Image (cartoon, rainbow, N blue to C red; front, side):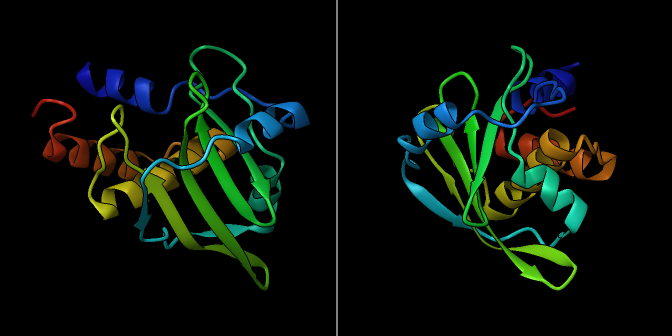
Length: 157
């Protein structure tokens, strides 16, 4: 039960999203990363069709959806939907038929303590997969839950 509560608070329940409105993007652009922290880019490769879905952006459609995201010049910006806080930035680069994240940063602020770099990297990857692509990779989510336990964000089993 605690795992489900953590996942719901972290990822939410992403719903299909229309393209993100330009007015919302303009408001989100004013929110900068607080205390940026470099994180290792996820090693995952993204296909052209996946990139197109990421590039279209995501706007939260309901309370259970926790994220807004947009792309500007191949850089993905991820914001919490309720607060507008920018949590991640990820620079993508084309490598033939796939894209890779070549640079990533997260943030540390009062409401979000920093995780270990590898945990933040995995969290970024899981958010992109679940929110933009509706892919729920059980192995990655289980690993993310283990990191959360080790960091003390959720109690041990």
